[in-house]
Image 1 (cartoon, rainbow, N blue to C red):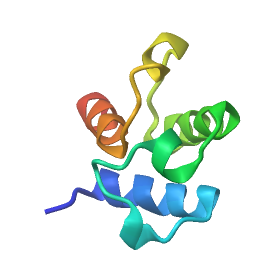
Image 2: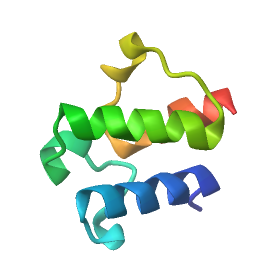
Image 3: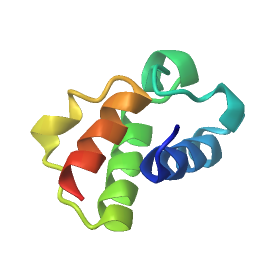
Image 4: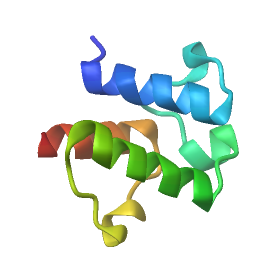
Length: 78
């Protein structure tokens, strides 16, 4: 079952990157599958930091490749 965190991140990515939410899975690669650039990733991190009330240091961002990476990271910190 998909978590609330996954659902919220999927909704955000679908809106931000103009992607069909049905095409977003935990295994989706944010850059390669959806064409996100570094600015998109920074926007996502800023939004998620605010939405979930967590701090995401710049050095952690380089570990975010798939949607699942981001979900796991957020879930471990909320």
